[in-house]
Length: 239
Image 1 (cartoon, rainbow, N blue to C red):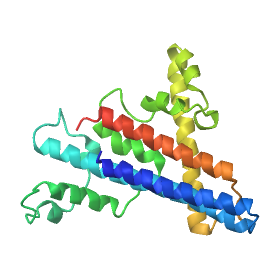
Image 2: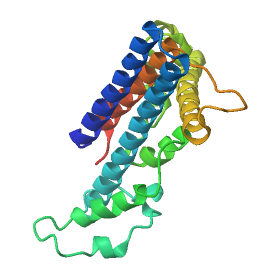
Image 3: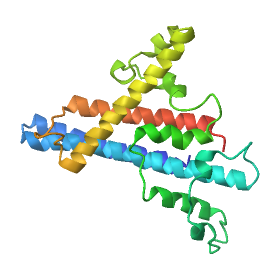
Image 4: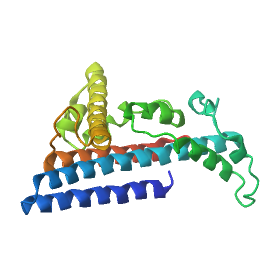
């Protein structure tokens, strides 16, 4: 993955954390409750946005790398259907104005897809990235150990030592439950962001509440998931 994608993610997460810390300062100063509450929601919303932007950039890179590898005859076996079905703008691909970087059109064409899309539906991530991962390294179960290493039951249900002690069918079950729990938690954060952005934090009638601890925990969970994903993709991607 281009290092700029993950660097941008880290920078955006720092911005989210700064907003959250400012909210805490206002809370300790006993400023208007709605103000620091709104800042906590805004911090989490920004963290979710950072995750979305990262996954979009990552997808563009993976799709571009796969297309380049296949066009150069370096892709092993058949080209994955998940990438083959993508509709890319022919005009961008065939643009010959970039003499020094003739394959740059592939990246620009891939990027055009994400300009009108997003990766907020966390359940779709495997569909978009498994094509570039070899058998045995598919998302999300394959990174269960990394996710559990953080050690927070609220995020993964099981701790890493519990995963290691599991054997046989129990081990496979625990891995799946770890991945399911983690993705479920991230999906909840995405929903909180949706409620905040689209109806000002009113999922029903009253404005929802979120504490500093809750916001901080969810922001950290997003950071850990993306870090685990980045490491896995970089260590196992086919192209």
